[in-house]
Image: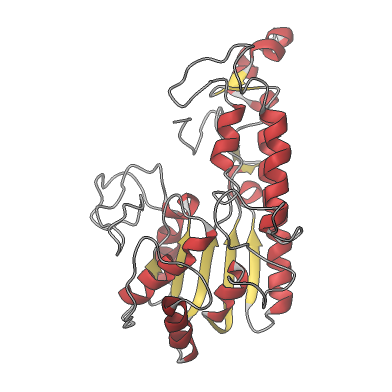
Length: 325
């Protein structure tokens, strides 16, 4: 039994064949789950494709796919509740868009009791964390626009040259997310209250995500944490660099990928690398603390997006990511 939760990286946001089926609380999660798709030729999210391949080999008998675009770690309770209901678990507590992850909430207690009674999963796959640290806002601050409507920046714009400052801010939030720094009045996440990991998982009003996930996995089961893709190609490898290779000075001054200046691309890529390294560290700690469950981190960049056979970030010849919106 496979539970697939997470944010847009798991839900398939950006794929054209978005399902018409809303979540149990009537939220459009932009899931490319293959259920009543708008565009049948548009593809499916990776957990759905992987499940189909593995089911053909007799490895799985069911999957509940409740990943939702825009999700933060606090949303694990809604996604788990939805998956449980669809899997046939009776839940008396109401599942709403504002369901909270406090240990004492009736919904959390009910789901924990169901797990203790044997309603667990053999595999849980998850991508979460980027929305907690407001990764999208960070990328926006690295764009050569002053606002979401696309107005060009000028030297007098408030956010001019703010990408470097934004990099430091988001890296501090990532440290809080994975428990390197405790959450307090000084150190907080951009969104939500549930860290991925914490030095003391047993304390606090909310339980860290990886700790709570382990409660819902059968002994001997697996938790697979997917990392985040590098959205933007290295400047020297972009299509533009190939076209302008006779004009290196022009590249330095005017080169950009989807509005991100060549000077700022390394900052964006560094944040993704920093986040993935932090996720891997938290996964190792979670595995050590939960010996009956196998925790594994998978970085999609060397395995899929940036291999010797091809590179697929933005501004390559065959990008697998939509442009900035």
